[in-house]
Image 1 (cartoon, rainbow, N blue to C red):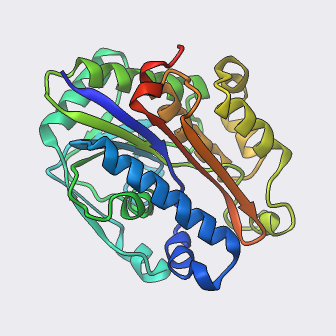
Image 2 (cartoon, rainbow, N blue to C red; image 1 turned 30 degrees about the vertical axis):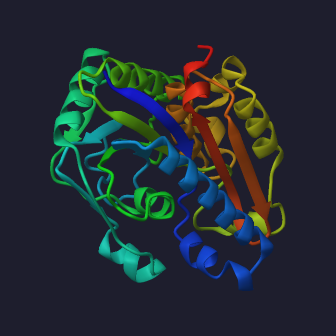
Length: 290
């Protein structure tokens, strides 16, 4: 039987690798972000996973308007990225890790059996949504990665409850797996976020919004029934065109059954979007209340 040994959420802003690498010469918030990444890297290493199931949105790289699944899973023998333009524009490093075809295939079959109509791919690349956190949390690039894509850009989207329920189904599939594996689940999304237009610079004058603070309070206190009804495309989009990326957080939350995290940190400053770091250790995962 497989074990779910770690669940974590970390940011994927493609400007962070450069800012973190130069943190000693920049805004103090980037030293704190560097410390948070290092904390999670140590925790993930201590959990000793054999495979990572990682949930992220896609940024019109792997998927586009003509072919956007609500959810999809990768089952190639290799997980590699990011796309060339991302490396060129942002100067971010590459990431090449093994995939895990057998476990990816098992997860696909298990989630289909639970009535999640996932797409699947054996021919894919992972974009910065995956590679930025992975480079920070597992720079050794040695643990197989099974990517789980979630549509957070192209409406109509499933409601937040569906993302949370997907996390529960991922948890159940892992725990029922016939493989002797230690599995970690990672996710990455957004709090308030806008890309393009005048709202993109809002964080420079309002580093953290009332929505951020309320959502963080509900999320970190396990208030599932209060938060999920507020997680719809329309309500999230009102906070900024990238804010529906918060839905990816719900996949990780579902994998813990709504447990209060064992550690978390939220950073905000006029120098960076709001960034969230959360983790649930094995004992906390086991104690999830839903």
